[in-house]
View 1 (cartoon, rainbow, N blue to C red):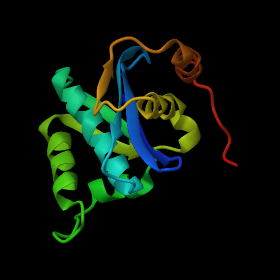
View 2: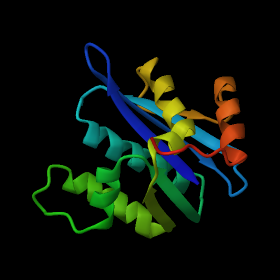
View 3: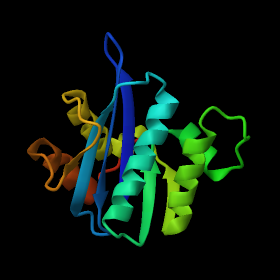
View 4: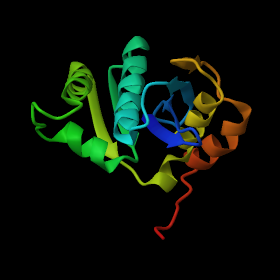
Length: 157
């Protein structure tokens, strides 16, 4: 399972991304975070985050996986036909190619259900690295992973 999240915040605005990959039992396999110096467009950041997560999964030789993103627009763009004139058509097609190269699917999730992934971009916010791989979970992420593995539910507000 791959959970991803991107963010654009601050003054001046900075864009960063991150995500985690877990096995079917919820155990942490890997994580990633990074900084995007050239954009403040949240759609570009969310799509880049999905791309980076899928690339990491391919690098890890994962054959089957579900990707969850709280960006409904990104998920929709990846599951429908997109005009050849869309600003991010090349990035969208690359992601679609990654999805179809393996048994990968993408689904939308609510932001409250994506808290583990929401943690990772904050690591990218404190760095100027294009992409950092986190082989072990940061200690502050452990309570969120435990809560998620136990199936903590968040009511819709």
